[in-house]
Image 1 (cartoon, protein in one colour):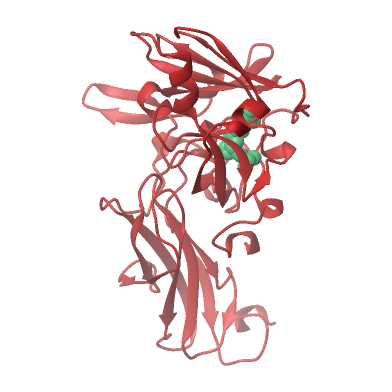
Image 2 (image 1 turned 45 degrees about the vertical axis):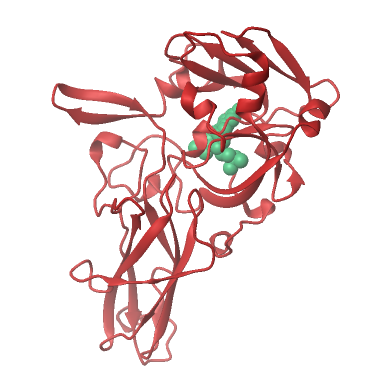
Length: 341
Ligand SMILES: Nc1nc2c(c(=O)[nH]1)N[C@H]1C(S)=C(S)[C@@H](COP(=O)(O)O)O[C@H]1N2
Ligand SMILES: [Mo]
């Protein structure tokens, strides 16, 4: 949890999620190809990218499986606690500059971003390459970056050196690391990481449909106190973070009675779209005893973080408000009295 207590997550504390071994790419031989539904195929070196206009933005990256271990009943996948999320400043070249210099042909629908890593993943028939597509409008969005730097430093190997995609506001899986090619396609891409894996179901008027995991949903975490803490009576500062995918966080609400009543927390420090916002709430416990704390984020467009997990989302989109149990006690004992037998 310490990694979550700064507005910017230091690179060495930023979570790492790799499906295969990290490829160790040599900057000298590395190129990024742009091909497919384009007027002219191009190939860029790291030096070419460095010489293009650079853009920077701060964005929160959250793994779509973050929080999975808190689900009732075991769900397959990495059993993440709360820590598969971080906030960094990403710098590099707008993806649209590359796509525009290749010239997109009429009829183009999506852009496939291919990583240099491949391997066998549960449920795959043979080796699969890590690749994900974006609809053309997202690939051309000015904030979609081919990032070369993370918090001002060249990307570390595990974060995608020498270049990775960053799709602000989307779950981390969209931000393909170790990029080696952009392929413009004229049909929906159905790669392994957006068909067999990383999809969620949704109820529609005509039944259940399947969507590719995309935009991050509103979510908050309580950073302090920690689960099981015993705190003395008196005013206590409850602190946390909240994010709302492509939107800014409009408000964070806190409940100290298991969800019966909610109060506004105070937003602290920078507050903008794509990036998490820190918050705090000065709480005066009404008396000694056990308390269940809950936080919920509200996005700029009014979407409220839910109190229950949507079972149609399986092991992804785990953004329900998770109760945090603490004890308020005047006793100096470290543990709640009930455990101090
Ligand atoms: N090439 C490649 N890109 C990838 C992945 C991967 O396994 N290979 N993992 C994805 C997932 S699921 C996440 S959550 C983020 C994690 O980025 P990080 O390791 O820099 O935190 O990278 C994404 N990009
Ligand atoms: Mo992820």
